[in-house]
Amino acid sequence: MLVEHPDEAAGLAIASALRFAGYAVAVCPGPPGRGQCPLIGPEGCAPAHDADLVVCSLGYEREAAREVLRELRTRYPHMPLLVEAPSDIDADLRELLDGCHQLPAPATPEQIVAAVQSLSGQAAEEGPSGA
Amino acid sequence: MRSPFHSEPEAFRFVLLLTLALIPVVLAAALGPTWLALAVLAVVLGALALRVAQLRMRKLRGLELPVKMAPPHMGSAAERRVLVVANDTLSEEALLTEVERLASVPRTHVLLLVPALISPGARLTGAVDSLLDQARLRLRTALDRVGHDLVVAGEISEADPLEAIEDTFATFAPDEVIVSTRWERAASGLEPRLAGLVRERFAVPVRHLVFEPGAAAQEPDKDIEARYRHEFGEAAARRFGLKALAGVGILAAVLMSMVALVQSSEREEARAASQAAAEQAALPPVATVVHLSVIPEYKRGPEGEKHDAFTTTEFAVRAGQPQELRIDNTDSVPHSITAPAAGVNIVVMPGTHTYTLLVKQPGTFLWFCTFICDEWAMQHPGYMSGYITVS
Image (cartoon, rainbow over the protein chains, first blue to last red):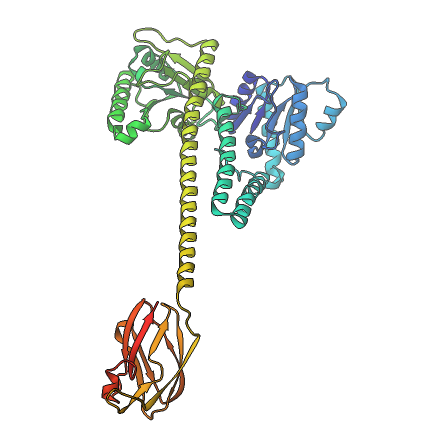
């Protein structure tokens, strides 16, 4: 499980809740201020590559999150994506979020765990190719 | 180091890069002298090493994107697992009190991890046992003092502290890590930067507790942690830089020695070839095929009587080069050209046949006929005997 969250403390809280629900987690604060996310670069991102599900937040650095989201959708079109999204997003973002599982921001770690469990249940029902 | 075969595109890029890097080496090897291929190889390896060093330095200075990992929680949701990493501070009463406090919380398991801090030098000199014994003694004393046998366990590790913690994450899956150090690193103590490194790698709460003799536990503030991080990163980068420089020096020395060796061997080969050609040119010419006969009573001896004889009894040949002899033996019995010292024994049958005369070593060798015929002629060169001159 990869948790992409710009707020480190919030990311760790989500990760902790997911761990206690039985998931192995990787937490990434996303691209730093002026840096570039490896996911966008040619080297790619190993935790994203290994993840069965990505939990993403659009709460803060929205432009950076937009890029990460676009890259995730392009590189891993079949990977389930759970996005914590605020209501005031533009049309472009809304289009990017099409097909993603969304939670209204701010979501609590418990809400995120419940959503992940629901998605994992769906994936298990769909079989190995569904995850 | 990250595997270049982690994903298909990465593997493709790696193979492509390898091929592109090998092309100039192969071209230089095919079209130029060996030293040029070695020089190109050195340039390619140097460029590769430079890139690896650049990436490594960037990582050491902490410019990589920090991704924290953690395994799933182990046991029931109510259970809590705390990993305490310490070495010389295990003797501090304040730390033991903290461990005792943690262990007294219901459903809490505590693991005391004691990295033995074995330096590469100690490994080389075999001083590992004393360090392990020290770590064992500290752990045993601490466990005895704390009690709570059922929930407090201990472990000694010979590995690097960070690796030891990584291993413990796989087996113990802690929900919290406490790293216990001094304010500054002591010879037998953990690096204060360790807490920051653990915090950067693992998605669990990490507490850095600093213990000084007789004092209560303290937690460094962000500025101090940042200083630890900076100093550690710079020191590690400096160490790596020095190692890389030494490595480059050794590689350059090895390559230069190889180039010099190849050049000298090429010069030696060329000199030997030209010397052989000159020697060959200086030798007297030899016929491709020598025609001769064996004729009974062919040649008159000094006493006036006719004796059996070969029409040619002096052969000039080149060492190691076969010489064809077309011999017409007009006699009704076989004869021979036999030179034991030269390893020659050609049996010349009646009639006309072609034989090969081959001598490997230079010199002048007496030959004679071993078939009993004209006894006098067999003992006199120029008749049924003669010389083979090998140049």
